[in-house]
Image (cartoon, rainbow, N blue to C red):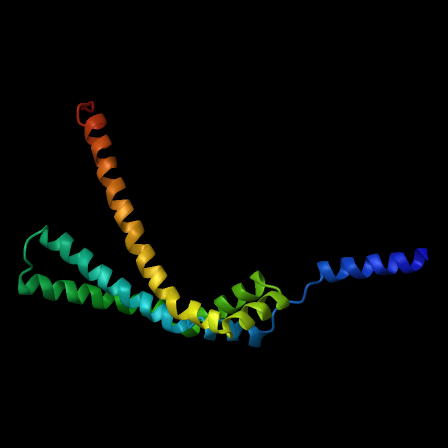
Length: 166
């Protein structure tokens, strides 16, 4: 009786301690289901747009860009875009993402996640999640802008009256 109880305890403990890591195929399947490569491309495209606006604002200072300034912005965006697309190219990014997935999930967890994404609810989640991300980003930007106005007010009221020693 003692031996069988000890064997049962050892079995339970060993299965909890030695959880099987996901297979390479399961990790790849998750990246495919999540359309990770396509999502990365979309993020790089969004970064190009953000850089274009930021560079234009910095260069123009609120005024209309000249054609020479616009050309400079496009050159800068092109160069930055090339750097980002080289450094974050899918063949460079993918091995690390696979390792992260395999280090984060156990095999049964990843199998369950993949099974969920195969259901109608999982497919709906995948289809609608970009909308959630986009709307959430706008919401946070709006809240952040409101916070910045308040922060600027604090800076003006608390720091403007102070004269720094020369």
